[in-house]
Image (cartoon, rainbow, N blue to C red):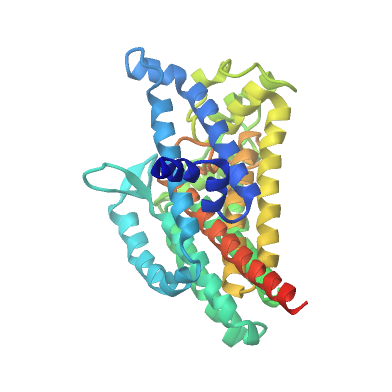
Length: 413
């Protein structure tokens, strides 16, 4: 009887609260987004599953549930680990990611003309190595920021050592995934700004990045035939790698209107228009039958179609609350490394979410980024869960230190 009572007490609300430390609001947001993911992924894949698996329209839902269970387990176990361990492994992980990204570019699995994945043997799971690299970069950058606060304003001693890892990782990601490289770079600059790096040094980097961006826009404009509404023939120099894709996406975003827009952009706009204020209702999406990747890249358009602009606003609100709670963790954390790490990981998740939603409603050129914790499971889903687990680990340890400080104050009083 005592053993049964002991077991049941572990799974009671009080027992779960004891086991799950850290920011309770973030825990609640993770659960809410996971439930939203199950609902929307099931709806978005219903027709596809019926066609692919001879009437079994539940197969993708079951897969998503498995990913969510594994993901929540990753969050739980990661939040139990003392975050200071990540500081010790940050440099090694960063150095490992360099050859890993190089290997991915030359020998990785090519999906949608981009080499971004490596396939793990036996389990046949494709892993996007840029997810590992981003995690390693932010760990290493947080470590460097914490150590160089005394010389942070110095260009040679503070700024250059911080910029070298950012340039290396973003430079290796860019050839296969330019959008991820730009988002990673933007998150890094934001972190450096909060880490007290001189604004003029950050502005110098921003100016340097804008030069190739403006060159790309200029090339896209020069090689676009406005009369025929298509790309002119590109010279051999501009036909290498992913350059034609970058040029085409810039051209589509600037010039393509109405029927000239890319197919997925048109279908996403139709989904948003059909949604209105309140949506068509759960499971009633019509554009899931026409929209490419309605379960990943364009899942936000499905959310708006089924739950309306109010549903779409609710998702934005959740990510904003997540960022707000992460900022609170940043302010509470007594150690610089943990504070910077929690903020960096929260920034990268929220910026990725905002980019995905902006693409879905036509405010940003087409990219391949997913909606964190909502899009159908994969390696990106699991790395998102790991990042959230690390944020909760920082919160958990900050909570413990705060509790110890309060006990000391009470004892003295």
